[in-house]
Length: 262
Image 1: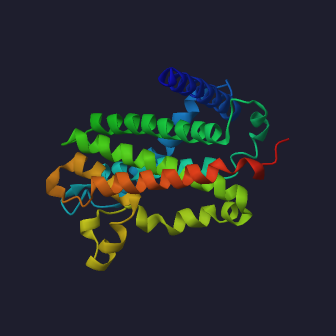
Image 2 (image 1 turned 45 degrees about the vertical axis):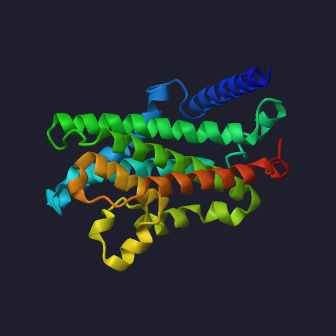
Image 3 (image 1 turned 135 degrees about the horizontal axis):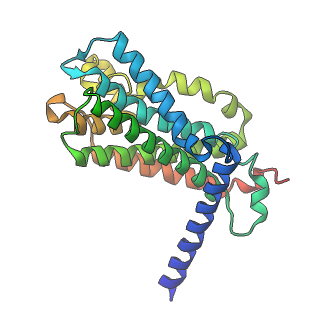
Protein backbone atom coordinates (compact mmCIF):
# COMPACT_ATOMS: atom_id res chain seq x y z
CA UNK A 1 0.00 0.00 0.00
CA UNK A 2 2.80 2.42 0.91
CA UNK A 3 4.62 1.59 -2.32
CA UNK A 4 1.46 2.31 -4.33
CA UNK A 5 1.06 5.67 -2.60
CA UNK A 6 4.72 6.56 -3.20
CA UNK A 7 4.51 5.61 -6.88
CA UNK A 8 1.27 7.56 -7.19
CA UNK A 9 2.89 10.66 -5.64
CA UNK A 10 5.92 10.37 -7.93
CA UNK A 11 3.63 10.02 -10.95
CA UNK A 12 1.64 13.12 -9.96
CA UNK A 13 4.78 15.19 -9.44
CA UNK A 14 6.13 13.98 -12.78
CA UNK A 15 2.93 15.17 -14.48
CA UNK A 16 3.19 18.53 -12.66
CA UNK A 17 6.82 19.03 -13.68
CA UNK A 18 6.02 18.08 -17.29
CA UNK A 19 3.16 20.60 -17.37
CA UNK A 20 5.41 23.31 -15.89
CA UNK A 21 8.04 22.59 -18.55
CA UNK A 22 5.46 23.01 -21.32
CA UNK A 23 4.25 26.24 -19.71
CA UNK A 24 7.82 27.51 -19.50
CA UNK A 25 8.41 26.70 -23.17
CA UNK A 26 5.26 28.54 -24.24
CA UNK A 27 5.97 31.54 -21.97
CA UNK A 28 9.55 32.01 -23.11
CA UNK A 29 9.39 31.07 -26.79
CA UNK A 30 5.74 31.07 -27.83
CA UNK A 31 4.60 29.34 -31.00
CA UNK A 32 5.68 31.86 -33.64
CA UNK A 33 8.65 31.43 -35.98
CA UNK A 34 10.83 28.62 -34.58
CA UNK A 35 8.82 28.55 -31.36
CA UNK A 36 9.86 25.75 -29.02
CA UNK A 37 12.92 24.97 -31.15
CA UNK A 38 14.61 28.02 -29.64
CA UNK A 39 15.26 25.96 -26.49
CA UNK A 40 18.01 24.22 -28.49
CA UNK A 41 18.52 27.04 -31.00
CA UNK A 42 20.03 29.46 -28.48
CA UNK A 43 22.66 27.02 -27.13
CA UNK A 44 23.44 25.89 -30.70
CA UNK A 45 24.23 29.47 -31.75
CA UNK A 46 26.39 30.03 -28.68
CA UNK A 47 28.32 26.75 -28.83
CA UNK A 48 28.74 26.88 -32.61
CA UNK A 49 29.94 30.49 -32.50
CA UNK A 50 32.51 29.85 -29.77
CA UNK A 51 33.68 26.63 -31.45
CA UNK A 52 34.20 28.35 -34.81
CA UNK A 53 36.04 31.28 -33.19
CA UNK A 54 38.37 29.10 -31.10
CA UNK A 55 39.05 26.73 -34.00
CA UNK A 56 39.99 29.68 -36.20
CA UNK A 57 42.15 31.52 -33.66
CA UNK A 58 43.92 28.70 -31.80
CA UNK A 59 46.30 25.98 -33.04
CA UNK A 60 44.67 22.87 -34.47
CA UNK A 61 46.06 20.84 -31.55
CA UNK A 62 47.11 21.65 -27.99
CA UNK A 63 49.00 19.09 -25.92
CA UNK A 64 48.28 16.65 -28.73
CA UNK A 65 44.48 17.05 -28.51
CA UNK A 66 42.30 18.55 -31.28
CA UNK A 67 41.14 22.07 -30.44
CA UNK A 68 37.59 21.72 -31.82
CA UNK A 69 36.84 18.71 -29.65
CA UNK A 70 38.38 20.47 -26.63
CA UNK A 71 36.08 23.44 -27.13
CA UNK A 72 32.97 21.32 -27.59
CA UNK A 73 33.64 19.16 -24.53
CA UNK A 74 34.15 22.32 -22.48
CA UNK A 75 31.53 24.77 -23.69
CA UNK A 76 28.57 22.41 -23.93
CA UNK A 77 28.74 21.54 -20.19
CA UNK A 78 29.62 25.16 -19.36
CA UNK A 79 26.54 26.39 -21.25
CA UNK A 80 24.37 23.87 -19.40
CA UNK A 81 25.58 25.12 -16.03
CA UNK A 82 25.36 28.83 -16.83
CA UNK A 83 21.87 28.57 -18.29
CA UNK A 84 20.71 26.56 -15.27
CA UNK A 85 22.04 29.30 -12.99
CA UNK A 86 20.46 32.13 -14.97
CA UNK A 87 16.97 30.64 -14.93
CA UNK A 88 17.30 29.91 -11.20
CA UNK A 89 17.76 33.47 -9.96
CA UNK A 90 14.42 34.81 -8.75
CA UNK A 91 12.72 31.83 -10.39
CA UNK A 92 9.74 32.12 -8.06
CA UNK A 93 9.16 35.81 -8.70
CA UNK A 94 7.53 35.20 -12.08
CA UNK A 95 5.96 31.89 -11.09
CA UNK A 96 4.77 32.61 -7.56
CA UNK A 97 1.11 32.55 -8.56
CA UNK A 98 1.47 28.87 -9.48
CA UNK A 99 1.93 28.08 -5.79
CA UNK A 100 -1.80 28.68 -5.28
CA UNK A 101 -2.21 25.19 -6.78
CA UNK A 102 -1.87 22.58 -4.06
CA UNK A 103 0.16 20.15 -6.20
CA UNK A 104 2.75 22.77 -7.24
CA UNK A 105 5.74 23.33 -4.95
CA UNK A 106 8.85 25.55 -5.25
CA UNK A 107 10.84 22.38 -5.95
CA UNK A 108 8.59 21.57 -8.93
CA UNK A 109 9.05 25.06 -10.38
CA UNK A 110 12.83 25.10 -10.20
CA UNK A 111 13.16 21.47 -11.28
CA UNK A 112 11.09 22.17 -14.41
CA UNK A 113 13.14 25.26 -15.32
CA UNK A 114 16.57 23.67 -14.77
CA UNK A 115 15.61 20.35 -16.37
CA UNK A 116 14.45 22.22 -19.45
CA UNK A 117 17.85 23.92 -19.75
CA UNK A 118 19.72 20.64 -19.21
CA UNK A 119 17.74 18.81 -21.91
CA UNK A 120 17.91 21.76 -24.31
CA UNK A 121 21.67 22.10 -23.92
CA UNK A 122 22.22 18.35 -24.35
CA UNK A 123 20.11 18.32 -27.53
CA UNK A 124 21.95 21.33 -28.96
CA UNK A 125 25.31 19.81 -28.02
CA UNK A 126 24.46 16.63 -29.93
CA UNK A 127 23.51 18.68 -33.00
CA UNK A 128 26.73 20.74 -32.95
CA UNK A 129 28.84 17.65 -32.25
CA UNK A 130 27.33 15.63 -35.11
CA UNK A 131 27.73 18.57 -37.49
CA UNK A 132 31.40 18.90 -36.48
CA UNK A 133 31.84 15.14 -36.93
CA UNK A 134 30.39 15.26 -40.45
CA UNK A 135 32.83 18.07 -41.30
CA UNK A 136 35.73 15.99 -39.96
CA UNK A 137 36.64 18.24 -37.03
CA UNK A 138 35.94 15.68 -34.30
CA UNK A 139 36.03 11.91 -33.93
CA UNK A 140 33.57 9.65 -32.14
CA UNK A 141 34.26 9.27 -28.37
CA UNK A 142 36.74 6.61 -27.29
CA UNK A 143 34.98 5.62 -24.02
CA UNK A 144 31.21 6.12 -24.08
CA UNK A 145 30.73 5.14 -20.44
CA UNK A 146 32.90 8.06 -19.29
CA UNK A 147 30.88 10.43 -21.48
CA UNK A 148 27.67 9.24 -19.84
CA UNK A 149 29.10 9.48 -16.31
CA UNK A 150 30.47 12.96 -16.96
CA UNK A 151 27.18 14.23 -18.36
CA UNK A 152 25.28 12.68 -15.45
CA UNK A 153 27.55 14.36 -12.89
CA UNK A 154 27.36 17.70 -14.69
CA UNK A 155 23.57 17.51 -14.90
CA UNK A 156 23.54 16.81 -11.15
CA UNK A 157 25.85 19.79 -10.59
CA UNK A 158 23.65 22.06 -12.70
CA UNK A 159 20.54 20.90 -10.84
CA UNK A 160 22.24 21.32 -7.45
CA UNK A 161 23.42 24.87 -8.15
CA UNK A 162 19.98 25.67 -9.57
CA UNK A 163 18.38 24.56 -6.29
CA UNK A 164 20.90 26.52 -4.23
CA UNK A 165 20.75 29.79 -6.15
CA UNK A 166 16.97 29.76 -6.57
CA UNK A 167 16.61 29.60 -2.78
CA UNK A 168 19.47 31.98 -1.96
CA UNK A 169 18.28 34.60 -4.48
CA UNK A 170 14.93 34.71 -2.66
CA UNK A 171 16.67 35.17 0.67
CA UNK A 172 19.11 37.86 -0.49
CA UNK A 173 18.97 40.37 -3.32
CA UNK A 174 22.77 40.47 -3.27
CA UNK A 175 22.89 36.89 -4.58
CA UNK A 176 20.76 37.80 -7.59
CA UNK A 177 22.78 40.94 -8.38
CA UNK A 178 26.10 39.17 -7.95
CA UNK A 179 25.24 36.08 -9.98
CA UNK A 180 26.79 37.31 -13.24
CA UNK A 181 29.97 38.33 -11.44
CA UNK A 182 30.10 34.94 -9.72
CA UNK A 183 29.81 33.02 -12.99
CA UNK A 184 32.66 34.98 -14.59
CA UNK A 185 34.97 34.76 -11.57
CA UNK A 186 34.38 31.02 -11.29
CA UNK A 187 35.22 30.29 -14.95
CA UNK A 188 38.84 29.26 -14.21
CA UNK A 189 37.52 26.60 -11.79
CA UNK A 190 35.03 25.08 -14.24
CA UNK A 191 37.63 23.14 -16.21
CA UNK A 192 36.19 24.43 -19.49
CA UNK A 193 39.42 25.89 -20.88
CA UNK A 194 42.06 23.26 -20.11
CA UNK A 195 42.48 19.81 -18.67
CA UNK A 196 43.69 19.64 -15.08
CA UNK A 197 46.92 17.85 -16.09
CA UNK A 198 47.89 20.87 -18.21
CA UNK A 199 47.88 23.24 -15.23
CA UNK A 200 50.77 24.03 -12.85
CA UNK A 201 50.83 21.66 -9.90
CA UNK A 202 49.54 24.27 -7.41
CA UNK A 203 46.54 25.07 -9.59
CA UNK A 204 45.85 21.38 -10.19
CA UNK A 205 45.20 20.87 -6.47
CA UNK A 206 42.61 23.69 -6.55
CA UNK A 207 40.81 22.97 -9.82
CA UNK A 208 40.72 19.21 -9.19
CA UNK A 209 38.22 19.61 -6.33
CA UNK A 210 35.77 21.61 -8.45
CA UNK A 211 32.64 19.51 -9.21
CA UNK A 212 32.44 21.10 -12.65
CA UNK A 213 36.06 20.24 -13.43
CA UNK A 214 35.49 16.65 -12.31
CA UNK A 215 32.65 16.10 -14.77
CA UNK A 216 34.49 17.82 -17.63
CA UNK A 217 37.52 15.62 -17.04
CA UNK A 218 35.26 12.58 -17.33
CA UNK A 219 33.74 13.87 -20.56
CA UNK A 220 37.15 14.61 -22.07
CA UNK A 221 38.49 11.28 -20.88
CA UNK A 222 35.58 9.65 -22.68
CA UNK A 223 36.19 11.70 -25.81
CA UNK A 224 39.98 11.31 -26.06
CA UNK A 225 40.65 8.14 -24.06
CA UNK A 226 42.98 7.48 -21.14
CA UNK A 227 46.01 8.80 -23.05
CA UNK A 228 44.68 12.34 -22.47
CA UNK A 229 45.40 11.81 -18.73
CA UNK A 230 42.04 12.86 -17.26
CA UNK A 231 42.11 13.54 -13.53
CA UNK A 232 38.87 12.77 -11.70
CA UNK A 233 37.21 10.64 -9.05
CA UNK A 234 33.72 9.44 -9.91
CA UNK A 235 32.98 8.71 -6.25
CA UNK A 236 33.95 12.24 -5.22
CA UNK A 237 32.09 13.86 -8.11
CA UNK A 238 28.90 11.90 -7.44
CA UNK A 239 29.19 12.38 -3.68
CA UNK A 240 29.77 16.15 -3.73
CA UNK A 241 26.96 16.73 -6.22
CA UNK A 242 24.60 14.57 -4.18
CA UNK A 243 25.52 16.58 -1.06
CA UNK A 244 24.91 19.88 -2.88
CA UNK A 245 21.51 18.62 -4.03
CA UNK A 246 20.60 17.71 -0.43
CA UNK A 247 21.63 21.19 0.77
CA UNK A 248 19.58 22.75 -2.02
CA UNK A 249 16.54 20.63 -1.11
CA UNK A 250 16.91 21.68 2.53
CA UNK A 251 16.93 25.38 1.57
CA UNK A 252 13.96 24.93 -0.77
CA UNK A 253 11.95 23.15 1.92
CA UNK A 254 11.64 26.40 3.89
CA UNK A 255 11.64 28.93 1.07
CA UNK A 256 7.88 29.13 0.51
CA UNK A 257 7.34 31.60 3.36
CA UNK A 258 9.81 33.99 1.74
CA UNK A 259 8.04 33.98 -1.64
CA UNK A 260 5.67 36.85 -2.38
CA UNK A 261 2.69 35.04 -3.95
CA UNK A 262 0.57 37.48 -5.97
